[in-house]
Image 1: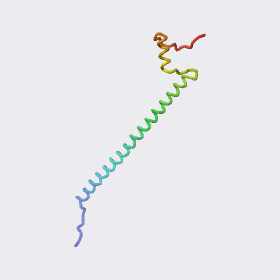
Image 2: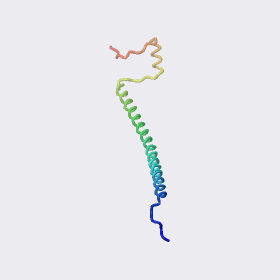
Image 3: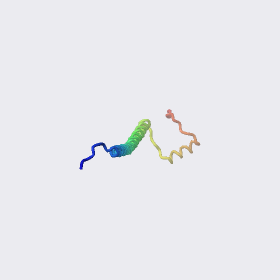
Image 4: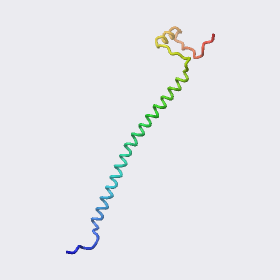
Length: 96
């Protein structure tokens, strides 16, 4: 028996549609995979930047305090405030 000569149009159209849908599904899957890891990486970078800026601010504050400043316990500070009648301590150095 002889094979008919000609194009099988329904099979060509069906193959084209299935191929297009499959390609779109693969593209969406790759895009979702990329976005998932992209957002995670961006969150990690923001966390690092935040910690670095906090550490820089803390170091700057420590530098501004300098070695000549001393900290006192909170109990002693409260006693000094009560003794001064609630007035805040002067920010100027004491003159002799």
